[in-house]
Image (cartoon, rainbow, N blue to C red; front, side, top):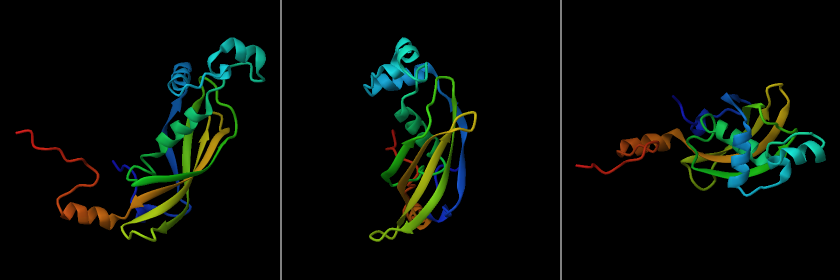
Length: 171
């Protein structure tokens, strides 16, 4: 199974649909809020959300949805990444609720070879997240530095597999 892509494998305009989707549970949302110390009652307090918000129910914290989509994209986009360079933009377009299922897709916007290191390049992508009804809930753009295939081939020739860690022989 392929995990990520080398620089040469990215084509501008390619769209990668990430599979499977993820149904967001109340537990997922509350755990993420607690781990990140976001205790806003819109996310944590059902009574508050029902009586004091326009949605009349808890809204899933947006950074969980962003993190979920970022994670979904790793096998298709950044599984071989040397570095995630930047998130250029992030927009939460519509709310997500407990029980919604999130699906993601990523489009390759641009790619360029590194100006300082010939064994890598920078790929710009846009990832969009949709709920089960097809409503876009989140969109973000980022830049990822990925190795070229020749780098991996030369490392393997030297006895190093850049995609697998080496461990000392326990004997």
